[in-house]
Image (tube, rainbow, N blue to C red; front, side, top):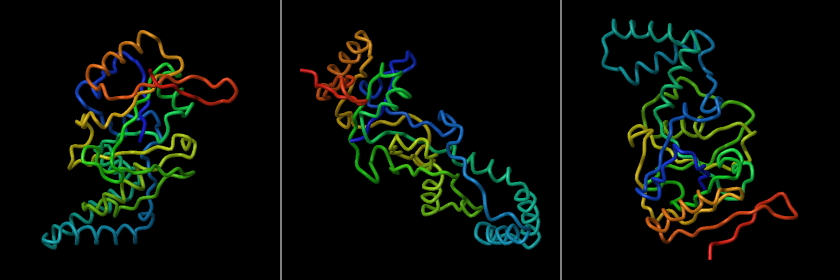
Length: 253
């Protein structure tokens, strides 16, 4: 089971319950400006830049004439001279992916505070296949680190193996300050459609837990929607423990 923390904001539509739709945002829509911002290595010296340009042209543009190869090499070397150019290329590439973030637990107090309107929202429990799911795509457990992930210009190889490495070292790496989230990410690569809404089987929705401070009107509204569109979904009500800094919950009778 994975968990998606949500709020009752007016902009939020209950599409996952009514139409079985989930949204995969792109990294530039995330709330953490450090997200998906790797550091670049392997272009510090002219020799490194020349070797990379030669490998790239040989691999991707092997049918070019000698004159055109030299012209392309000069363009590549000029661009690689400024690391910001390479970072810009990487950021543009990464921002074509769609990412669905979820947590491993329903009772993470900080998650309720940060993503569910200070415990006034709700948490959806969903069940998908690990590794690869026909609806959600590739999944990765987020790695938490003190430093940015490192990429080289070769990260731009256009093949399945390299795309996986790019995902693992950028999209699935975050600062250790976020480690409490225990985050799982499902990735939609551009070939799958990238960032947009995707349909799932509504039977993947297993449970909903309302926040300890959720408004009764909001609870009743969503409960009615669940009963109409996904009646098999279990409904829980969370509450603050009377003795510990933790949450407990009771199932709706």
